[in-house]
Length: 134
Image 1 (cartoon, one colour):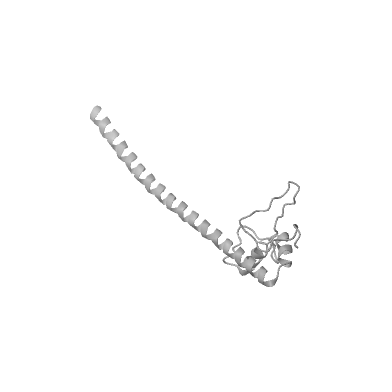
Image 2 (cartoon, rainbow, N blue to C red):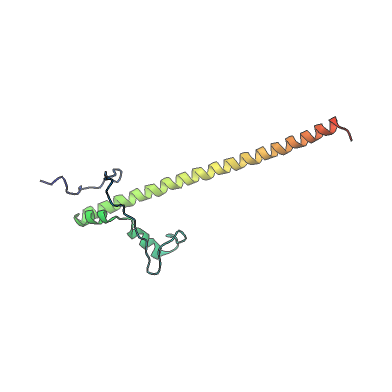
């Protein structure tokens, strides 16, 4: 019989474990051979950066959980993690696309309002000329 402290057989990536206030916060260190990874480094343009970032996706607890799993379970968990990450990227893509569309709509509306303002200003000038002839 499995004890209550044994790791679960399958990971549910949608369930976050509860932590106490005294729990230590894990901060991954994105170190390359030469320097820390910075916001200017690109995962898409540099294979070394991609490997370093990918290595730090797993927390020390994840490493412990994966060591007690069979190869098949670890592969299944890795696949689930990959699918979860792909879904997150897709979700972010949709959000960015929606934001870009909204920005385009606002720019179009802004142009229209500026044109209306300019026309209104010209109309005011014409009315002022009619009221006060030179």
